[in-house]
Length: 553
Picture 1 (cartoon, rainbow, N blue to C red):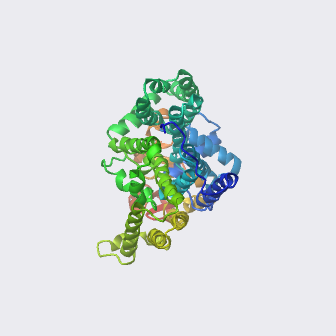
Picture 2: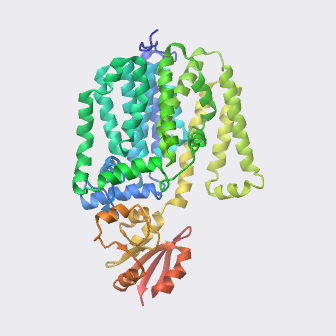
Picture 3: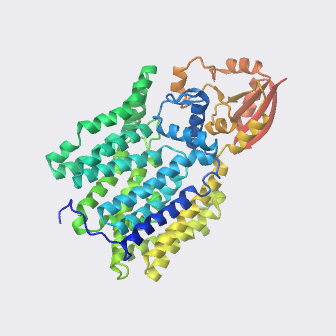
């Protein structure tokens, strides 16, 4: 069989009409439960969720959909697609946590269905279903599906574009190219031109393997014109408004971040290795087996998926600046590889293969070890366990599930048991996120500030800034001069009056306001009292941060 030929479809022993409706129905149920249930319960967490929610709120407030603003100054570190989607969600459903996270959750659900569709196109329905379920229950995927960040929307469009390009190359379907480039254009508008770099690095080896004609297919003029028509208008408009923008955006926030990483989360080259282990849970132990399988006539498709995942991991590992969500686009190809292997084992109906058994034994051993270390921590680990006490009972429950699911699968020899355990594990994660939000969200501070607000008051950050506090209170910050992500916006709007360059300006500003709310670290309160003579009443406290109402004496 040639690499471009389609292998026989496998439908899990079900009639075609039944299996065709059953698999999507199960994916919908899993997606709704894992990505949408209690989506709006946790408060938005700083910094990312608070930042992007506040940008979308200010987009509606200022009625400026072309220049994103944060704290009422231009914020141009990222393109606007996710801000647009979030603002539309706010306009439709109100300024709520669920509306803020809705674009990420919808993109995650769409990504699961795209994994199903791609797996079905490559191998068959059963393989697509297993791959989609593996993706839907990966811990990292579930968590990022329930957070307002740029990454899930970016990942969906990037994955969509990469996969369509491969199908256009390998199945000789040139009509898919415009759709592939449209998807990449939307990925660029979500996070930047890195989408084009990644797609080129992934498509390149596939094209060279298939010959010169396939390579030329990558540079189809019509597709590039479509991409330019979607992407360029916003970039050209912003560059026209602010000539400094191209250098800031392309050089400082892409090239410099990639090359130096000094100011942008510099991490060692191996950073994403342990992180990938965590993001793939509870499927981590099966990943080496799934990636190393020999799959005969579908080897070409598997090589493509390996290239896809390898390029994502390799590209960002070389980068000096690293953040955990960067490798989210690698989860879909890895999930399909694992899912294809599990579907093959299930279709044989002859018990568990040796490689699967070894993987399950390894996973069970690791799970029981982690559970044992949690419940009976040695002296050096005990302080870390105490710090995670706020996650109880969900953290210990997830560790027990990590151990119990592969153990039960070994006993019953049924992969459905493993899938059920993965679903339970994934269902516990949102509950743990709710506990984390109690520590990280400024929602209570924002509600308190809103309740105490009076006309003529001002909010001042003393070497501290919370975008989430602005979102929940509806007020922007006056900031005592210190380095923040607003520096570029401050350069573009130097007369906005929101930045206090020194103590003299702070004293003068406070003298003009009958009521000032200070947001600061608890350790800075004595320092502030010694320099600004006012009354100070602590109205709210969050961890080591204070919200203070201050009146003139």
